[in-house]
Image (cartoon, rainbow, N blue to C red):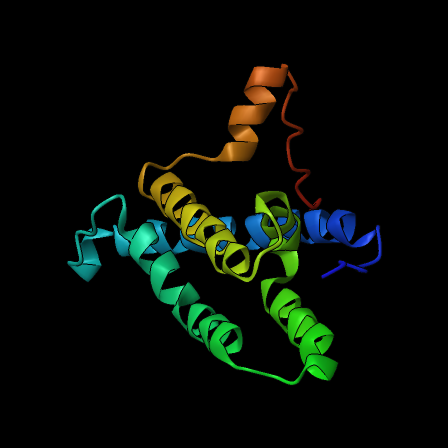
Length: 150
């Protein structure tokens, strides 16, 4: 069928993609930093974020698979497609790049696992992507101003 999704949607989705990456990356980095502290005795592997990411997408995958196998009357096919796109949200642009087939929406969720893995690994290794980018781009970090004591 013809995809009548507004032309702007892949761009909006890509912008949301950066917000998703940022939030998942930061949350997983902070979690790894906390979990590797000796007082918790967890001693997590550096790739534990992949497991967290996988666990995080399971509910979405289940809903998407249910939507894919759900037979709907032809009148509701577009609604079914929009719901599937809605559950993909920030990853719609990638599903569309893959081919825009229903299975591509499920496959696009792999990005969440990747983000979680990268974020957790960064926290486990005390790696700050912002500091790395500043160093590579030659940007000096601005020192934080301390409040004056009067």
